[in-house]
Amino acid sequence: MDGKHPNQYDKRPKRRKDKDNPYELFSVGIDTPTARYYIRFKDGQGVEHCLEIKKSLFDTLDAFELEDLSHLNEVDNHFERSELTEAALHERAFAVSPPIEAIVSHKIEREELHKAIQSLPVLQRRRLILYYFGEMTYEQIADIEKCSYPAARRSVLSAIDNLKKILK
Image (cartoon, rainbow, N blue to C red):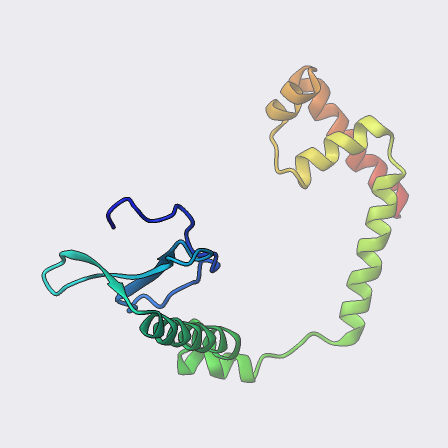
Protein backbone atom coordinates (compact mmCIF):
# COMPACT_ATOMS: atom_id res chain seq x y z
CA MET A 1 0.00 0.00 0.00
CA ASP A 2 1.54 3.23 -1.12
CA GLY A 3 -0.15 5.79 1.17
CA LYS A 4 -2.35 7.16 -1.67
CA HIS A 5 -5.30 5.01 -0.64
CA PRO A 6 -8.25 6.65 1.09
CA ASN A 7 -8.21 6.10 4.82
CA GLN A 8 -11.53 4.23 4.92
CA TYR A 9 -11.06 0.60 5.82
CA ASP A 10 -13.75 -1.97 5.13
CA LYS A 11 -16.68 -2.03 7.48
CA ARG A 12 -17.03 -5.79 7.71
CA PRO A 13 -17.26 -6.88 11.34
CA LYS A 14 -14.31 -8.76 12.76
CA ARG A 15 -14.88 -12.46 12.39
CA ARG A 16 -13.78 -15.36 14.45
CA LYS A 17 -11.49 -17.51 12.36
CA ASP A 18 -10.50 -21.11 12.39
CA LYS A 19 -6.98 -21.52 13.78
CA ASP A 20 -5.97 -23.09 10.47
CA ASN A 21 -7.15 -20.13 8.36
CA PRO A 22 -3.96 -19.01 6.59
CA TYR A 23 -5.04 -15.54 5.44
CA GLU A 24 -6.69 -12.26 6.40
CA LEU A 25 -8.88 -10.21 4.06
CA PHE A 26 -9.30 -6.44 4.20
CA SER A 27 -10.17 -3.55 1.95
CA VAL A 28 -9.31 0.13 1.83
CA GLY A 29 -11.51 2.94 0.52
CA ILE A 30 -14.59 0.75 0.44
CA ASP A 31 -17.01 3.68 0.01
CA THR A 32 -15.02 5.34 -2.74
CA PRO A 33 -14.59 4.68 -6.47
CA THR A 34 -10.96 3.68 -5.84
CA ALA A 35 -11.62 0.81 -3.44
CA ARG A 36 -8.79 -1.71 -3.16
CA TYR A 37 -8.89 -5.25 -1.85
CA TYR A 38 -6.07 -7.08 -0.09
CA ILE A 39 -5.10 -10.46 1.28
CA ARG A 40 -2.44 -10.89 3.97
CA PHE A 41 -0.80 -14.23 4.67
CA LYS A 42 2.45 -15.90 5.77
CA ASP A 43 4.30 -18.19 3.41
CA GLY A 44 5.91 -21.52 4.33
CA GLN A 45 8.99 -19.75 5.72
CA GLY A 46 6.88 -17.50 7.95
CA VAL A 47 7.38 -14.37 5.83
CA GLU A 48 4.29 -12.15 5.79
CA HIS A 49 2.95 -11.00 2.43
CA CYS A 50 0.23 -8.48 1.60
CA LEU A 51 -1.12 -8.58 -1.94
CA GLU A 52 -3.73 -6.53 -3.75
CA ILE A 53 -6.40 -8.78 -5.29
CA LYS A 54 -9.40 -8.32 -7.59
CA LYS A 55 -12.83 -7.70 -6.08
CA SER A 56 -14.17 -10.97 -7.49
CA LEU A 57 -11.45 -12.98 -5.70
CA PHE A 58 -12.01 -10.95 -2.53
CA ASP A 59 -15.76 -11.71 -2.69
CA THR A 60 -15.10 -15.42 -3.24
CA LEU A 61 -12.69 -15.63 -0.29
CA ASP A 62 -15.10 -13.57 1.83
CA ALA A 63 -17.92 -16.01 1.05
CA PHE A 64 -15.62 -18.93 1.93
CA GLU A 65 -14.81 -17.23 5.26
CA LEU A 66 -18.53 -16.90 6.00
CA GLU A 67 -19.11 -20.59 5.22
CA ASP A 68 -16.18 -21.48 7.49
CA LEU A 69 -17.63 -19.34 10.28
CA SER A 70 -21.02 -20.98 9.82
CA HIS A 71 -19.38 -24.39 10.16
CA LEU A 72 -17.52 -23.30 13.33
CA ASN A 73 -20.78 -22.08 14.87
CA GLU A 74 -22.52 -25.34 13.98
CA VAL A 75 -19.75 -27.35 15.60
CA ASP A 76 -19.95 -25.20 18.74
CA ASN A 77 -23.72 -25.56 18.95
CA HIS A 78 -24.03 -29.27 18.24
CA PHE A 79 -20.93 -30.99 19.54
CA GLU A 80 -19.50 -31.13 23.02
CA ARG A 81 -16.10 -29.51 23.35
CA SER A 82 -14.66 -32.05 25.72
CA GLU A 83 -14.01 -35.66 24.92
CA LEU A 84 -16.00 -38.00 27.10
CA THR A 85 -14.50 -41.28 28.19
CA GLU A 86 -16.51 -44.46 28.28
CA ALA A 87 -16.49 -44.29 32.09
CA ALA A 88 -17.92 -40.76 32.07
CA LEU A 89 -20.66 -41.78 29.63
CA HIS A 90 -21.49 -44.81 31.76
CA GLU A 91 -21.67 -42.64 34.89
CA ARG A 92 -23.98 -40.19 33.12
CA ALA A 93 -26.24 -42.94 31.85
CA PHE A 94 -26.69 -44.57 35.25
CA ALA A 95 -26.65 -41.47 37.47
CA VAL A 96 -29.40 -41.78 40.03
CA SER A 97 -31.29 -38.61 40.81
CA PRO A 98 -32.39 -38.14 44.42
CA PRO A 99 -35.99 -39.01 45.29
CA ILE A 100 -38.49 -36.17 44.98
CA GLU A 101 -39.13 -36.27 48.74
CA ALA A 102 -35.48 -35.47 49.43
CA ILE A 103 -35.48 -32.60 46.92
CA VAL A 104 -38.64 -31.06 48.41
CA SER A 105 -37.42 -31.54 51.96
CA HIS A 106 -34.09 -29.89 51.15
CA LYS A 107 -35.87 -26.93 49.53
CA ILE A 108 -38.17 -26.45 52.54
CA GLU A 109 -35.21 -26.56 54.92
CA ARG A 110 -33.35 -23.94 52.87
CA GLU A 111 -36.40 -21.65 52.82
CA GLU A 112 -36.79 -21.98 56.61
CA LEU A 113 -33.10 -21.23 57.11
CA HIS A 114 -33.29 -18.12 54.91
CA LYS A 115 -36.37 -16.88 56.80
CA ALA A 116 -34.61 -17.48 60.11
CA ILE A 117 -31.51 -15.59 58.94
CA GLN A 118 -33.71 -12.67 57.83
CA SER A 119 -35.25 -12.52 61.32
CA LEU A 120 -31.84 -12.00 63.01
CA PRO A 121 -30.75 -8.54 64.16
CA VAL A 122 -29.02 -6.64 61.33
CA LEU A 123 -25.52 -6.77 62.87
CA GLN A 124 -25.68 -10.52 63.57
CA ARG A 125 -27.17 -11.25 60.15
CA ARG A 126 -24.49 -9.26 58.32
CA ARG A 127 -21.60 -10.85 60.23
CA LEU A 128 -23.05 -14.36 59.91
CA ILE A 129 -23.41 -13.91 56.14
CA LEU A 130 -19.84 -12.61 55.87
CA TYR A 131 -18.57 -15.60 57.88
CA TYR A 132 -20.48 -18.42 56.18
CA PHE A 133 -21.40 -17.16 52.73
CA GLY A 134 -18.56 -14.67 52.25
CA GLU A 135 -16.10 -17.25 53.66
CA MET A 136 -14.33 -14.58 55.72
CA THR A 137 -12.43 -15.06 58.95
CA TYR A 138 -13.29 -13.28 62.19
CA GLU A 139 -10.24 -11.06 61.62
CA GLN A 140 -11.46 -10.02 58.17
CA ILE A 141 -14.94 -9.33 59.51
CA ALA A 142 -13.48 -7.24 62.34
CA ASP A 143 -11.51 -5.19 59.78
CA ILE A 144 -14.55 -4.61 57.56
CA GLU A 145 -16.89 -3.84 60.47
CA LYS A 146 -14.23 -1.77 62.28
CA CYS A 147 -14.69 -3.74 65.49
CA SER A 148 -12.58 -6.07 67.61
CA TYR A 149 -11.98 -9.75 66.87
CA PRO A 150 -13.96 -10.86 69.99
CA ALA A 151 -16.92 -8.67 68.98
CA ALA A 152 -17.04 -10.19 65.47
CA ARG A 153 -16.75 -13.71 66.87
CA ARG A 154 -19.37 -13.07 69.55
CA SER A 155 -21.83 -11.72 66.94
CA VAL A 156 -21.47 -14.80 64.73
CA LEU A 157 -21.81 -17.21 67.66
CA SER A 158 -24.86 -15.30 68.96
CA ALA A 159 -26.40 -15.48 65.50
CA ILE A 160 -25.88 -19.26 65.44
CA ASP A 161 -27.50 -19.61 68.91
CA ASN A 162 -30.47 -17.49 67.77
CA LEU A 163 -30.86 -19.60 64.61
CA LYS A 164 -30.92 -22.78 66.70
CA LYS A 165 -33.70 -21.33 68.85
CA ILE A 166 -35.70 -20.15 65.82
CA LEU A 167 -35.38 -23.45 63.93
CA LYS A 168 -36.34 -25.75 66.86
